Image 1 (cartoon, rainbow, N blue to C red):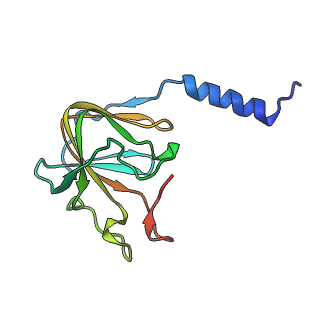
Image 2 (image 1 turned 120 degrees about the horizontal axis):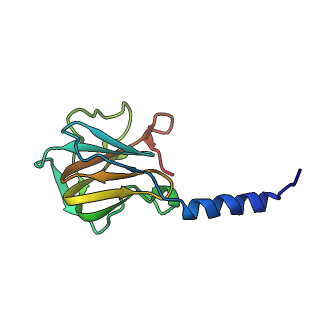
Length: 144
Protein backbone atom coordinates (compact mmCIF):
# COMPACT_ATOMS: atom_id res chain seq x y z
CA UNK A 1 0.00 0.00 0.00
CA UNK A 2 1.52 3.36 -1.05
CA UNK A 3 1.95 5.96 1.64
CA UNK A 4 1.97 9.75 1.43
CA UNK A 5 3.44 12.37 3.69
CA UNK A 6 1.20 14.83 5.50
CA UNK A 7 2.52 17.55 3.20
CA UNK A 8 1.51 15.56 0.09
CA UNK A 9 -2.00 14.96 1.42
CA UNK A 10 -2.40 18.59 2.45
CA UNK A 11 -1.17 19.75 -0.97
CA UNK A 12 -3.68 17.44 -2.72
CA UNK A 13 -6.53 18.83 -0.57
CA UNK A 14 -5.53 22.43 -1.31
CA UNK A 15 -5.30 21.70 -5.03
CA UNK A 16 -8.74 20.08 -5.10
CA UNK A 17 -10.24 23.02 -3.18
CA UNK A 18 -8.69 25.56 -5.54
CA UNK A 19 -10.22 23.93 -8.60
CA UNK A 20 -13.62 22.99 -7.16
CA UNK A 21 -16.72 24.90 -8.20
CA UNK A 22 -18.73 26.01 -5.18
CA UNK A 23 -22.32 24.94 -4.78
CA UNK A 24 -24.78 27.75 -5.64
CA UNK A 25 -27.96 27.85 -3.57
CA UNK A 26 -30.96 29.64 -5.06
CA UNK A 27 -32.69 32.01 -2.63
CA UNK A 28 -34.57 34.05 -5.22
CA UNK A 29 -38.06 33.32 -3.87
CA UNK A 30 -37.65 33.98 -0.15
CA UNK A 31 -40.14 36.22 1.62
CA UNK A 32 -39.87 38.47 4.65
CA UNK A 33 -38.63 36.80 7.84
CA UNK A 34 -36.68 34.11 5.98
CA UNK A 35 -33.01 33.61 6.80
CA UNK A 36 -30.06 32.66 4.61
CA UNK A 37 -27.30 30.86 6.53
CA UNK A 38 -23.67 30.75 5.40
CA UNK A 39 -21.27 29.47 8.05
CA UNK A 40 -21.42 31.84 11.03
CA UNK A 41 -23.29 34.54 9.09
CA UNK A 42 -27.08 34.91 8.81
CA UNK A 43 -28.87 37.19 6.34
CA UNK A 44 -32.45 37.97 7.43
CA UNK A 45 -34.84 39.12 4.70
CA UNK A 46 -36.26 42.44 5.98
CA UNK A 47 -38.53 45.14 4.57
CA UNK A 48 -37.10 47.96 2.45
CA UNK A 49 -37.51 50.51 5.27
CA UNK A 50 -35.42 48.54 7.79
CA UNK A 51 -33.26 50.98 9.81
CA UNK A 52 -29.65 51.37 8.73
CA UNK A 53 -26.56 53.39 9.47
CA UNK A 54 -23.96 54.94 7.21
CA UNK A 55 -22.94 53.50 3.85
CA UNK A 56 -19.86 51.31 4.34
CA UNK A 57 -16.92 51.05 1.95
CA UNK A 58 -16.88 47.26 1.84
CA UNK A 59 -18.83 44.31 0.47
CA UNK A 60 -17.53 41.96 3.17
CA UNK A 61 -20.32 41.29 5.67
CA UNK A 62 -18.29 39.43 8.33
CA UNK A 63 -15.72 40.91 10.71
CA UNK A 64 -12.09 39.91 10.28
CA UNK A 65 -9.32 39.39 7.76
CA UNK A 66 -8.99 35.61 7.66
CA UNK A 67 -10.27 33.21 4.99
CA UNK A 68 -13.16 32.36 7.33
CA UNK A 69 -14.30 36.00 7.36
CA UNK A 70 -14.51 36.29 3.57
CA UNK A 71 -18.31 36.43 3.33
CA UNK A 72 -18.49 38.81 0.33
CA UNK A 73 -21.58 40.13 -1.46
CA UNK A 74 -20.94 40.42 -5.20
CA UNK A 75 -23.20 42.31 -7.58
CA UNK A 76 -25.15 45.57 -7.58
CA UNK A 77 -25.39 46.07 -3.82
CA UNK A 78 -24.95 48.69 -1.13
CA UNK A 79 -23.75 47.73 2.35
CA UNK A 80 -24.71 49.93 5.30
CA UNK A 81 -23.88 49.77 8.98
CA UNK A 82 -26.53 47.78 10.81
CA UNK A 83 -28.79 49.75 13.14
CA UNK A 84 -31.19 47.22 14.65
CA UNK A 85 -32.08 43.56 14.63
CA UNK A 86 -35.07 42.28 12.69
CA UNK A 87 -38.13 42.28 15.00
CA UNK A 88 -37.99 38.48 15.38
CA UNK A 89 -34.35 38.41 16.59
CA UNK A 90 -33.76 38.92 20.31
CA UNK A 91 -30.56 40.06 22.03
CA UNK A 92 -28.69 37.12 23.53
CA UNK A 93 -29.02 37.36 27.30
CA UNK A 94 -25.97 39.01 28.81
CA UNK A 95 -24.43 40.10 25.51
CA UNK A 96 -23.86 43.57 24.20
CA UNK A 97 -26.52 44.33 21.56
CA UNK A 98 -23.89 44.96 18.91
CA UNK A 99 -22.23 41.59 19.56
CA UNK A 100 -24.16 39.82 16.82
CA UNK A 101 -25.43 42.74 14.70
CA UNK A 102 -23.84 43.01 11.28
CA UNK A 103 -24.38 45.30 8.32
CA UNK A 104 -27.54 45.81 6.27
CA UNK A 105 -27.23 44.74 2.63
CA UNK A 106 -29.42 46.34 -0.04
CA UNK A 107 -29.48 44.29 -3.24
CA UNK A 108 -30.44 46.44 -6.22
CA UNK A 109 -30.27 43.65 -8.80
CA UNK A 110 -29.53 39.96 -8.30
CA UNK A 111 -26.36 39.36 -6.31
CA UNK A 112 -24.41 36.46 -4.82
CA UNK A 113 -23.10 35.94 -1.29
CA UNK A 114 -19.74 34.21 -1.77
CA UNK A 115 -17.23 32.50 0.51
CA UNK A 116 -14.14 30.39 -0.26
CA UNK A 117 -15.24 27.55 2.08
CA UNK A 118 -19.06 27.57 1.91
CA UNK A 119 -21.78 27.24 -0.69
CA UNK A 120 -22.59 30.51 -2.45
CA UNK A 121 -26.11 31.97 -2.20
CA UNK A 122 -28.09 33.99 -4.72
CA UNK A 123 -29.72 37.09 -3.29
CA UNK A 124 -32.86 38.56 -4.86
CA UNK A 125 -33.53 42.28 -4.97
CA UNK A 126 -34.31 43.45 -1.43
CA UNK A 127 -32.87 44.14 2.01
CA UNK A 128 -30.97 41.74 4.25
CA UNK A 129 -29.98 42.37 7.86
CA UNK A 130 -26.85 40.43 8.80
CA UNK A 131 -26.44 38.83 12.21
CA UNK A 132 -23.65 36.58 13.47
CA UNK A 133 -23.55 33.26 15.24
CA UNK A 134 -23.29 33.81 18.99
CA UNK A 135 -21.10 32.01 21.52
CA UNK A 136 -22.81 32.09 24.95
CA UNK A 137 -19.58 31.15 26.71
CA UNK A 138 -17.72 34.29 25.53
CA UNK A 139 -20.82 36.51 25.08
CA UNK A 140 -19.49 37.43 21.64
CA UNK A 141 -20.07 36.67 18.01
CA UNK A 142 -18.26 33.66 16.60
CA UNK A 143 -15.42 34.73 14.31
CA UNK A 144 -13.49 32.43 11.97
